Image (cartoon, rainbow over all chains, first blue to last red; front, side, top):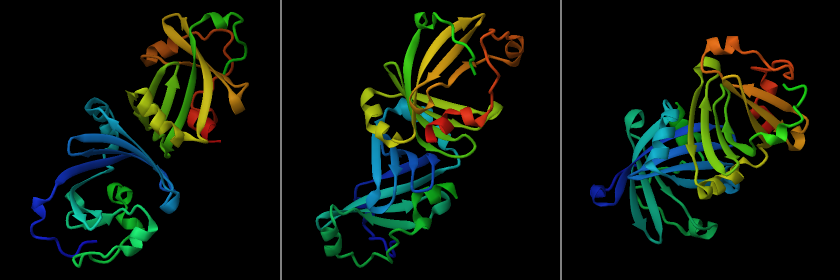
Amino acid sequence: MVKWLPRDLKGWRHFVIDQGYLATESAGRQVRLRKAGCTTSLTFKVGRGSHREEREIKLSPKQFAALWPGTAGRRLRKVRYEIPWDSVMIEIDIYRGRHAGLVVAEVEFPNTASCRKFMAPWWFGREVTGEKRYSNVRLALK
Amino acid sequence: MVKWLPRDLKGWRHFVIDQGYLATESAGRQVRLRKAGCTTSLTFKVGRGSHREEREIKLSPKQFAALWPGTAGRRLRKVRYEIPWDSVMIEIDIYRGRHAGLVVAEVEFPNTASCRKFMAPWWFGREVTGEKRYSNVRLALK
């Protein structure tokens, strides 16, 4: 979670993400469609934590357009800012629509050591890693 | 269900179908991958009966190969024969692997009238329309 947003955020690389879910199961199994800027993709995920498996393919605009209506009622929109920080990238997601007001920062680490070494910027709020209510599937379905 | 197979079936157009499910929900919501002959596709389905919605895209071999491992343990294989009959097409699916022995014929009608008019060939067995245990999702998951 982010408690304060740097005022000059607009200067950073950012793009709108529209995503929706064709189908989701328990155990994190899901098929997600995403349009991030001009890039359209389909992602399959299964498992949680260290047992996570993720498979992504790029879709042509035509392929995406054919499947997207299947996600009606299971979508969310957010603006993503990408901010380089030390040797990692901080992704800040500013949610739109019915989740407006929610702002979440995410950092992916290549290994446990770099995760442990990471010093969060002061404007980070409390950690929400693993909190299901902030999972994008949950937000999109509710 | 088919109780008897015409001896000269091999002469008809047929191809191997491998299909697997990335994710399935109740209410018939599912994302299916299929390789039929050389054609690879992804199909999204939701709803049942007359409220069925179906969206299909062709996948490149590379797209298919990237997603297919996600269907491990949720697959089935069958050989499909396509037999023109009156003004319709009879599809006969001969299941392989752990469902070997199961043979199902399927006919899709453009409207209710043509369905009512249809005279099934004598080698058709009992009708299994709507029987969940013969749905491909069920067969693939069990």
